[in-house]
Amino acid sequence: MAERFPESFRTKAKLVVYREFIETRDKVGNMETTMTTAVPKLTALHPRIPSNSFSLGFSLTFPAKKSARVKQTCSPSSHISLRVSSSSQSQAAPEATKVSSIPSEMKACVYGEYGGVEVLKFDDKVSVPEVKEDQVLIKVVAAGLNPVDGKRRQGKFKATDSPLPTVPGYDVAGVVVKVGDQVKGLKEGDAVYGNINEKALEGPKQFGSLAEYTAVEEKLLALKPKNLDFIQAAGLPLAIETAYEGLERTGFSAGKSILVLNGAGGVGSLVIQLAKHVFGASRIAATSSSGKLELLKSLGADLAIDYTKENFEDLPEKFDVVYDAIGNS
Image (cartoon, rainbow, N blue to C red; front, top):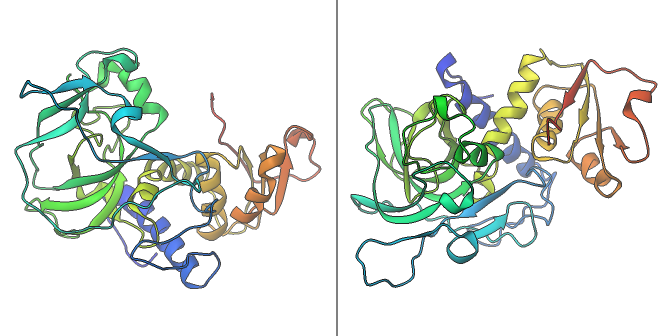
């Protein structure tokens, strides 16, 4: 990794490692990323993006109302364009980096009580968050959704949650429009990506990424990979951090072998790539259904196992690490 960061910048370092990895792989021509415009065109199944990750191309619009204050049910089908990051249907987000004037109010998805999706509302009069000295203000272009967003909205960790009302959202990709006094590594106009919360369950920010603007600590962000558009980048941060931290906790290092359960999933697909290209794994095996075995191999797996036909527990070879990317799903 070319850049070095203090301990407090560990999240940023993980994002930088991944950015350097995918940019380097494209430079040496390992993957098809033919540049025909300012935005890269990717293959239908981009091997570096989790197959089940998705993010929102962010453009909040509201139907005409007589009232000056608009508050609608937060309905993605009506107001936000949902796009699967790795799908062939994914549309490239505009790579605009011009910094415009910052308003005092913004549009955002908000909930004022815990519950199901019905508690989510659109509000066009949410105050733009203030920027602390170690933070930057991001003009959101795309925002990712994760299972933790739903659990938080349901109140499953309200004892440690931020006050209501809440603007949800963890993962973000966008453009820096303002920097705090102590920010040294980012500037206005930089395209960035990251997870806005240092700890997912302990005091997550009251103003998340499902808004036109969000304030984030510099240490939680990295420059967006040049060969991914904003929508694709927003589907990555929390999954990258989960995959990377799991490998770190096991003490995984060069020369070790690993078996990844659910290797085609959001976290599992990143574990394979990181284990092979960043940590230097000697051998990688991964499980998935029969239709995704070739994807596993393209990600870097030496052995692709169809869990519907084989029991990985019966494999004759042993592995230094078994990474369970299934969890409680």
